[in-house]
Image (cartoon, rainbow, N blue to C red; front, side, top):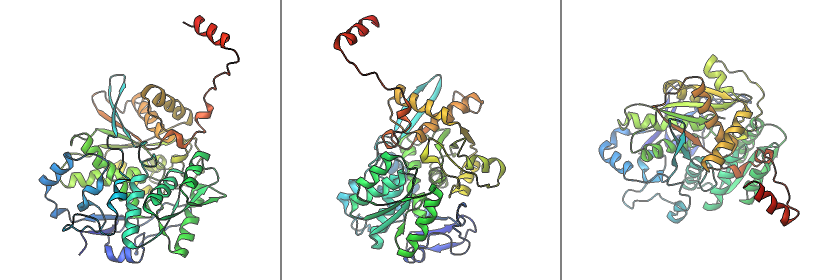
Length: 425
């Protein structure tokens, strides 16, 4: 009997793991819907037999471990595990070790009198937070005997699953919008993925990926559609718990596109709370671009209205967030809030994070810092509170924003440079 099962986030119906995984079912069989340009309905969540966990022992194991190796805790993973041999069946331990995440993700930052930290996932195997989901999807595919994995992406999820598949000897098939940043396209292709550039938006790529993957019976990694993506991203909550030695932050600022990172973090913290390992949930604060702010609008109105989305922060550009409903629940149930910032604020924040803190982030990650600053200006944050910024993608993945910075002049003569340096001394 499996140690986990699937539960619908909408109708609450429960399903045994063997039924969902054997038939490659992704959404609730009863109420699940994946309609074009609409949030997903009937997203499945994975639940465990938490009563079997020895809480005190589990807490000690967590606090004595290092971040980045969630697979050290098979009790909270939807993978088969052989306790007699202390290993995951069919999974090469050397390859598993090769995809270790950043082991020291939390960095303290100085900002006025505020207590500020960053969670830096820009140093993961493919340089983004998306590796957390991709690793789990790849491991499940191996145990299910599946060789082909597909995904729709604005870039990070695609490069992530392409890179992780390369490490595990699997084949990836990636659908991206034509507006994908060139550096992300190159990274995906470099890993040997089959790349399909869609003449449309990310939402169009998402829908096409679903259709083609279903016909070809590829294992689909699409965010929120595959429950393992939420499960993989919950690992960030456990790494935050470990990094802060059980004392979780008051506020966590999360860049939000499809809403799976914030949904996954919420699930992870909720598990820690249900296990009595934390006394409260941190406030989860969704940060979006003002020109791609469907989650912010839904949080305020509780109504979804499709509007075009376009932003310099391509990783959080989604007109129809697929995990919209869980994202809103994460914000509301954690007593957080949703805030949007303009692209100019995002670019300004990116420059500060790179030049003053030395963390090379892409625009979507910088939006977390921009949202933090705006929250301060609007009186939402107190100086005594502990704040954490989620930095989810490396700046090398999107050079378009950096090209907007001023280029240095070309030096023609050594004497000119010497005189200039002397004058400015």
